[in-house]
Length: 213
View 1 (cartoon, one colour):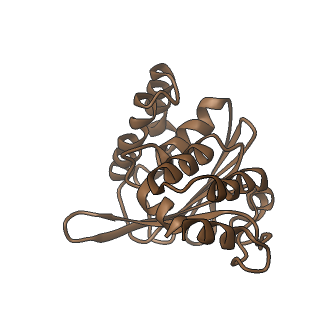
View 2 (cartoon, rainbow, N blue to C red; view 1 turned 90 degrees about the vertical axis):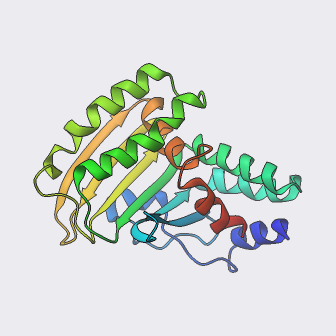
């Protein structure tokens, strides 16, 4: 069944068209993609009251999508398949991650959540601790423009990865571009993708289940 789900998701004409990573940096995540590209989606809920906080969508490029399609043929074990998909996603060099906030949150709440997942990345050996410490220390400075404003419902963040280049865009609910930052280096892309797909990340299970069922 897992094989069938993965193959259907990647066969042109059978999958729902998704946003193309190569055009999304310029046009946001609204452009229509080839049907063969992998897209994963999850909703983050916080607190015992299941309050919806944000959604995460991840699009992977064609090479990564083809690799994931081959995994559906090669692997039968559900857990092994999930681990292998996560590994492909973490090391993707062509990807788009889009975060849409569905409620208002404070900058401190947001940064706390980011660091909670980011801290898992060096523990898994994906990036050195020194890189994690540098990124973690810089996050409050990078997002300082939200200190008084906070994060509003309808705001979004887009992380566009191409090779070792990471472009980060923060777009306000009204369409205003509040941040457009480019970082170069493997640690930048691995820290972002690792935060979503590393084991024990609060996003990993939902993202993988959106693909494998």
